[in-house]
Length: 248
Image (cartoon, rainbow, N blue to C red; front, side, top):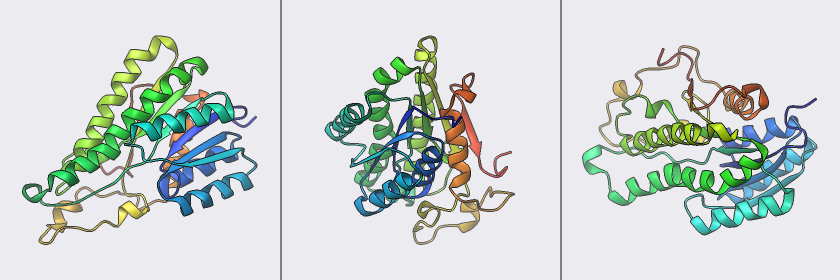
């Protein structure tokens, strides 16, 4: 039996990259899907591809750092499917700049999407996940586990996601809710080709590197699917690296 038959997952950042790969993986495993992103055309493509796998799919434009939009999306998900079994917080942005030149508005935007968005989705989802004894999978990063030169905002946001993950895991453990984070690196997505600031030391940026080369987003989707499934029923509060041994 598919692991997600008769179950429902809400996935943010579902238009491209890891979010799209996660949507397709869960669709293949029988999940009903509620997909969110700000990129309408790409989101519609993901929805069509998931439907082609036989999944029941609803998609909605949603800025994850907008409290009202998150609340509306969650309400629409429950109205459509009547339940929620898994929340996959994939939406995120990356910005590089010399720390002493970082515009405050860019700092705030990165933390708003990556950390505030994760908070808002988790807060909205938890009452429904408690009813199904479901799971949250947050996308963190190895940048939250090590120093990322020129990426202080991104690293700070992902470190916050890791701390948030642990707090939720402990607070709700006795009520059957699990919460984990995955920490990808060397994954072929649009985020893997950022713009670096003038004068950036590429030797700093390339340390450490994956020993297994660059992989597609499907490898992260595999891990997310596992953590969201009942097979991971005794795993919670973890930050699991998927980085080709870069930080080993």
